[in-house]
Length: 487
Ligand code: NAD
Image 1 (cartoon, rainbow, N blue to C red):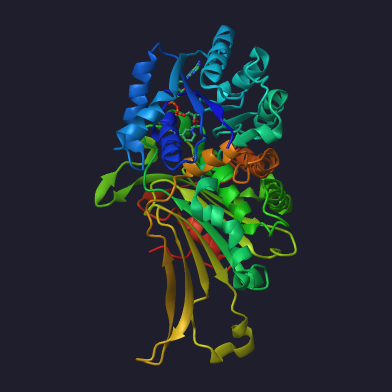
Image 2: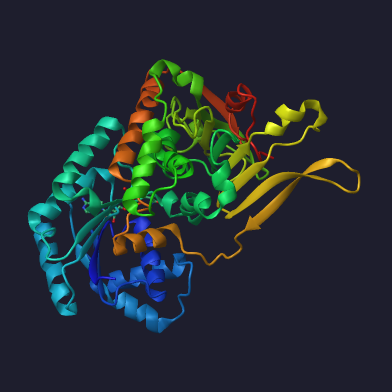
């Protein structure tokens, strides 16, 4: 791997502390960092290199999944870190930064490969990218890349504007848009499931699949994020990015070769085949909800409107369920159901594939009423896969459903940020969100945002600690289905 400089904008922020430094450190101890590297953290406050290094070490000790007791390794890692006081709005600071980056490159004798990680509020993305170009930070003799965090725009127009601006400073191949769901091992596995299992490949189409359900439910409420969440809601915070990315990964066809370009191509095809929603149809296919008070783990919790920092008249969505259709030869007629929400009964990200039962058509009543075959892919917090099949119980002669289970008990797996940063350092963008995917996702979501704004659909209240509003269950009942695995 090429030696490089890792410039972290927002180096004193929460994300940097909880995820980015621990990820870099774990990569380092697993020998997945280049042989020489320089890490430069930026923040607005004045601070000495020493104080900053100490605070990074503390974060690693607090948040790292792996070994932090090897003081020799820790010292070696921390020694690679420097701090620069930096204000993104001040052009002079970019020049100062350029000088410092160059100085460190010379000291360490490393080439001008520069990774710019923008862990800052989205309003800084375009300003920072443009100033990287103008200041000369981006004019390197080596490579330059930029990792950016979500959100990428807040609607279709703003996303296009942002992309337009970023593309003035960076080529699309140089931009790594993080969607940390794409860093989860079981999501990364989705693309290769059908590749490695001929059984699945044979069944992965509308002849055998009745419907697919993608759920991401959380127990937590809005927590301390009221200011951000109350104008974002589940639709922008989860649905437009993470949920649609999981849909693409599930529905994409086998690429001709596993390369970033081919995978992006196949994902884009899924989005292009997604049946667009007209604003007047949103209410038929989308359910929005907001949590009310309820009981969670035996404790009473307040509803969304009584959370600190939330307006009592807020119409923000904390739950979304939707029915989507992919009109291509493979998936035509198979509904994809997506739901995501806060303050739900359990924390679970999973995909359930419900298979059809063609035997019923052949044998009709001769077949006992059995459950459909299911393939369940558990993404978070557990990782695993199971099949729900039918089998005759020898004790009573009855056919019963059985579960064939695989659970990944190895808790020592790399975190999403580790996998993704490692990929970006290697120049592999397979598990990042590419512009076309992001744009098509916003295109799909825009009529839903418009319908919300015009209040064209009800805002259903659901009790905290439930599986969401009753309307989300009716959505599937209309089609003769139900959400699987709700207790
Ligand atoms: P934070 O508020 O904790 O940190 C923000 C950082 O930006 C700080 O280091 C601060 O010094 C810096 N900053 C602010 N104004 C600046 C300026 N004018 N010039 C230079 N630096 C400035 O935020 P965070 O939680 O670390 O999130 C960072 C980004 O990541 C945001 O875009 C957020 O939306 C995104 N994100 C965060 C999380 C998370 O779990 N925290 C998850 C997904 C995405």
